[in-house]
Length: 81
Image 1 (spheres, rainbow, N blue to C red):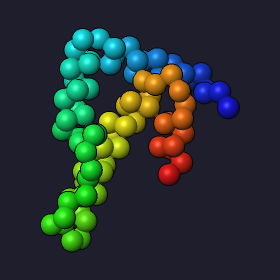
Image 2: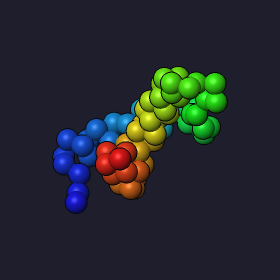
Image 3: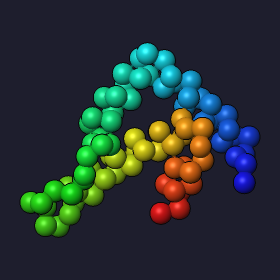
Image 4: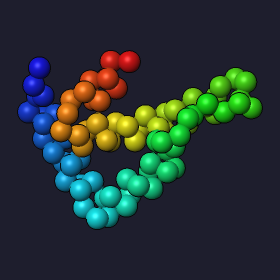
């Protein structure tokens, strides 16, 4: 199913913002801060609150990357957990 015109335009804007040198630096920093490439489970977090917080951060970066992507697969996966 193709994107709506609004979503197509928004995805183009994400690509524009994060394709610049500054945007790439910001995304690199967000990936680090949001633990995009690391597990989010913390062994000393029995209630899971901190782990859930980290997973929320990670999800935000994954969403940005999905919006930048030419493929709809990651965006579809994030919107249908």
